[in-house]
Image (cartoon, rainbow over the protein chains, first blue to last red):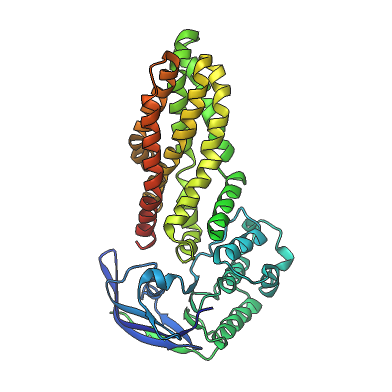
Length: 207
Length: 221
């Protein structure tokens, strides 16, 4: 995993469909830190995450990822290569089994991690052989967590990671985020709920 | 390269699972081309003459059938975000998806075409040209189709718009492909076949870039 020292968002402005969602967003998250992104529905939490990931172009402003090696990355395509992503949707193929999905993620990211071990860790080992269409929303979320681990990226951008998860699943998600940050990673989490982690909080207010 | 192969095999596997388009396209191809004799009558001489054209039109329609889900399915379940953030760039991802579409849709059509040629009384000397023209031309259908699929991936019921975009663009393949079969029947040179090959090479070479641009537009939209 490449090590990031800082994620810096400067004067970030987002427009969607001609409407300004937020403007002049400024924050910085350092290596080892978790930041929660909070705000009302429509405040632009998901849009902010998509911009940081490089999936959505910003109207103005900068997103810089400073690497521990000394250089900084600001290009969207390069940010995409450093991002572990969990969006509203889990990117799980319903027709493939849990294991086939996980093996695909591992091959896609070139992960040198034991896939069966990761599935065991997120509590899906027992149902690794069943088609993903039979998974509950929470189980799909767990498969999304497995993908995050397999992606082995320094910056985690998570959009409502706790949704649909049961109490054990929530603890698991918080634990994984904690471990990730202990390893020098960074996590930015859009959520309405408390993670149970020592996290900086950022509020996206209405404009 | 490993990521490319992973995506390619995933898409091929999906095409053969429930709801995948692999056998559907081949069945549709067989059905449409065997319907034509019911419409135009059982005049064997006439059928033999138009067999190449019938098979090419059916092939183009069959290739269209599974195209609308090429990017849309990945868009809806979030896989496209995962791909956009993967080490594979979107151009390579599009190329893998186009190749998978051809293997699961175009290739079965090529293999099935001699049987349907027999059904339509295609003259013996034209079989080589039929198979060769479909083998050379169907990648162009997948390539041009992918561009349309990428452009319409966020449109609900985009399949109809997709057909309106793609069908005019693949007309050259249709013209040269059917002409290549006629050329073989009447021994009038290989001009059409060469034009088909040129069109196909251009379409296949450009399509990963154009479809990646379309995907980028929709993912960032």
